[in-house]
Image (cartoon, rainbow, N blue to C red; front, side, top):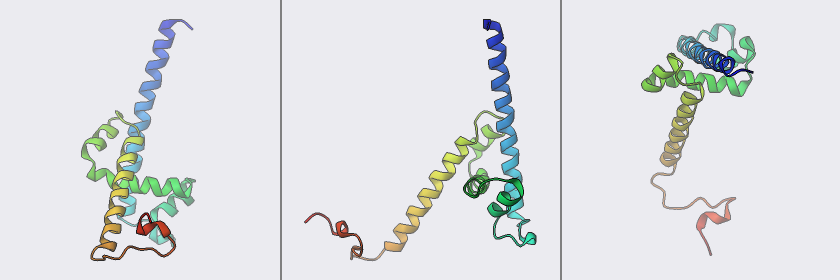
Length: 131
């Protein structure tokens, strides 16, 4: 394939990728709004992720991830804007949302153990430290 043809193809690939990223951003904004408005409730569905799985054919885990990322976009203004204009892919806000979720879980775990001086040892012989 001649070099100029490769350059054209590269440009087409990167341009289409940017459009896909921007479309994914738009989709996630719609999902966030649908979830905020609880549009899924009138179907008798238990969550927005369940509705996405049912109506859009998205696997349950991927649907939960999409809802989590959709909800997080408002709290990620710089990443959100880059995603909106196609500069970053879904991976960037997804990683940030996952990191935030891990941080929140750790915070809840810390709260659950606050004020206790006794280590949890049931089922975990290493919890008390080395012998």
